[in-house]
Image (cartoon, rainbow, N blue to C red; front, side):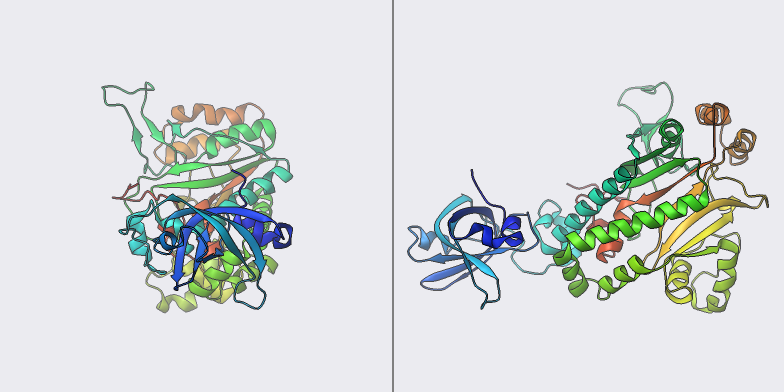
Length: 449
């Protein structure tokens, strides 16, 4: 079928004048009078819907005027500019074909539904403004991430989803097995929590790589920020230190924000109006600000005057809480902040030990409104120190021999970071719950649809 996407019409309406066009989509609304009806049709190609005018001269007008919301139709007619009306143009239909009727029990009859209700109909909720906008922003952000790294010569690495190594050492992994007895791979295997370790192997060959794939955490958490399945962006760069790591993270964040603001203005305007007032102002501020830098030790010191306002007092040696992170970005620095040099005891085994023997060359990027959005580090390139660190944290150095070999055979200083993709989309949209930026979220106790 030679059909025109609604996106194309909004991008260049003059290109479709004065001939006839065909659009196909789903009815969002239908207003009916005796001799005329106005339908809002959306085909998923754009956030906006197209107004289609249905006159009584249509052979099936009486049938069409009774159609329910959600019906799939094809409309052929002329595009007419209407600068004096609320919409810039409309399609005056000369022919309507009903592709698929919609049962009156269709649950999306109202214009606004609660997000909690929409989670119960995950197979239908992408048709709503809020969820479709969040997923479209995610699509544009994902493309921008690939463009950012590809333009800078990074190789896209597909790291394993099934692994026998725990990259984080936290033990919160899903064990993968068969219905039969024994281990399919000859040893315990799990769904990966990170592609970092294999990414480091790739970086030792290509110099600059990034992974963009699914990761899993068997953490029984029901917070708004946690999911059992999520996507991670993880670059690794050879011959680079922590300063290079932070520069890359800052450049990537600004690149993605710029791309989304350019390509999703209607979606962001919607979120700014209905979800998170001040979103556009906050994104613009991040785009044009210099990211601050502070050590973990200094950050704990700066937080002390605010300690009475926190649920958890900031103490050296303890992880920063979201309330601490937001205080740093929103009150103390009023800008995105890199916090560096964390205590070794609260960070992973692969992070490079600093000369003080107490802290590691780690960094977290904190942003206003969210807190931590990126975590990274310079990796430990010294064989003996890495081997000792694995053992110190209760790991088996033998299990990581291949990882240690990267230090034996032409190792070099290198670094990388991880960005939780869904958390990035939450930040870009102002959506408060990770369940509402994923098409089919997987969380503790819930794996529907």
